Length: 316
Image (cartoon, rainbow, N blue to C red; front, side, top):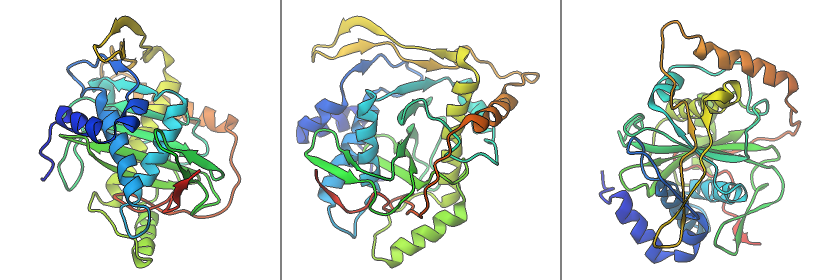
């Protein structure tokens, strides 16, 4: 493993290289508990992806960074919604499958982009064995341009699809500088079809796009389903959500300090608890009221580096 920087070293490096982008992404300090990695891991991952996307303007390249840069633009609109997941709840969600007949068109995200900070050493990436620091996701619209924070650039949302897409991404330790993602049509099931991912990967490789090494499609599908589980459980059990708030403190840098927004802090796994079945029931209820997006088209997969927002990372 060549990633030898610590998270704090990576943050200092990024701040020194591209301070303008860092400032618009690292907008607050969340007082993270010792059970989780510092909140700045999110700023490190997003800023590094934006930097890479700016450098890789034309194929071949690791244009998965463009997907994450687009997600950064969406997250910025909502002030980077971040949820800290308790260990018992996260372990329960790792072992629970989302509804099999439920698609991402049926799932209503609380925001078009959000991030889950997961407990330390709770999930390792398949193949590399690297620790995953957080899992994020966003809804990419089929039309328009998504402005990238801290730059004069935008990602063309319609470069490779006429259909809305979902990007699920995650950051790897120890530095947080490396991110992986998978991007797929919103018509896919909550655990996306791994065969479809493989087919799209092969198609793009044949078209001349480079593929970064990473986990296989089974793992990327699993992480997508895990992200969906966390969204579903927040909708099904609103009482497990503890909103964070300003503490009234400031860092020397001037950043305001917030307490973390937690989900499942007091949740305990009990053998007789019916909690794991509840998201399935709730999902069926949500599906009945969800507005289905009826757009055709296909789109590329970017798991471990395949492009989907594409090389048209231009000014706009």
